[in-house]
Image 1 (cartoon, rainbow, N blue to C red):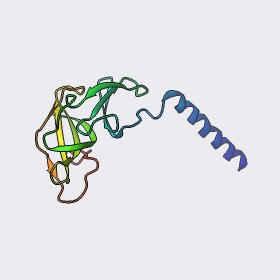
Image 2 (cartoon, one colour; image 1 turned 180 degrees about the vertical axis):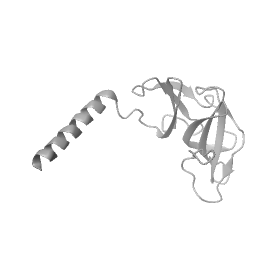
Image 3 (cartoon, rainbow, N blue to C red; image 1 turned 135 degrees about the vertical axis):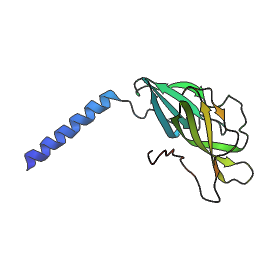
Image 4 (cartoon, rainbow, N blue to C red; image 1 turned 90 degrees about the vertical axis):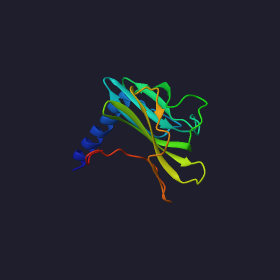
Length: 153
């Protein structure tokens, strides 16, 4: 019994060393609730956090998910969002040949959370906001919009 436990612990330790050698964690710091998509051989990650403004979402790219490079922002720098502030919890999806970034934002007037979308023909942008929210809460908080199509995530 003790030999079996030692053997299991050895394999667990070995596995952790192998995994640690392949990936540097964390990949991102100061980014909350990132969303990611793989297009061809490139991963695109979108995220919000202290390094992004209250009106923007950052884009990162990587070919190995071991080193992410800044690929800019969803919206132009110094852009003022037409209906929301505190953009957060973005997800990126390919829908019918277009790349959509879904995100939450706070209604500038009421403070209630809303879900918005920005679209682009390429995952790295440039993106164009729909200009109005897809959905506004009647009092409940949205934290992470998730696209569901035909019953699948």
